[in-house]
Image 1: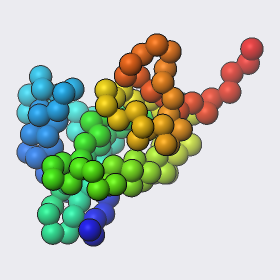
Image 2: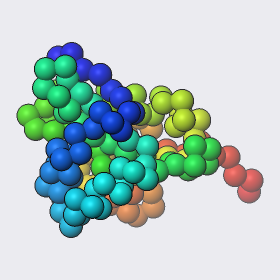
Image 3: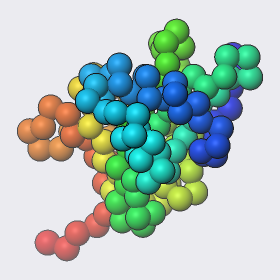
Image 4: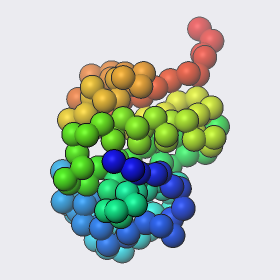
Length: 139
């Protein structure tokens, strides 16, 4: 499948993004206004197919130096299970404004294996929090 990833918010199918996030286990409470505000206030990534339009979405809150929080990573049906999530995450983590961030965190209930492949580890006893931490701390 031919696809491309863009961080141009103007290419996002906001209606589709809202529907997909609203249908997820984590975003069912969100209104359309909330979705619009999250897009407005985040770095956003769209996964697009030339033939099918937008087929995935993710967003990141970050100071671009110390901390980044990856959220709303979703591959739309029927494109799940085709390895696109791995390619999408790789692109996001290699983005010039994210790749040097010291600590990158996320929450997931069901995709631990995907994120572990990129170096994320469980945070404490949390069932959902994961982080990739490059920061060095003095003892």
